[in-house]
Image (spheres, rainbow, N blue to C red):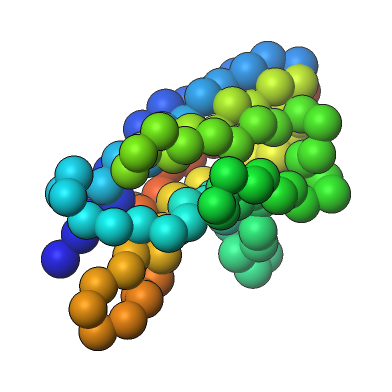
Length: 116
């Protein structure tokens, strides 16, 4: 089973930047799309950004500040001008394609904390 390994989380002051990475454990696996979600304490998991077939999409709350990109089976999330409301656990998401169809895989999550 493919695992998604995330890195790059941490603590930063408001206005700072962080870059998250997510790499699939198997290089040969086919992944059709990769994206990022986040979950703040007491809130539901929400969509952040996605890179699918060369097209990036963003939640309104991060558009213009975050940049999602992908290199083979690694996804990146460059987060600029971070705000305290960006504090959350960030999860990588991938659509893994196999002979039996497409399944969704999730990373273990990485904490991002933004202080004011």
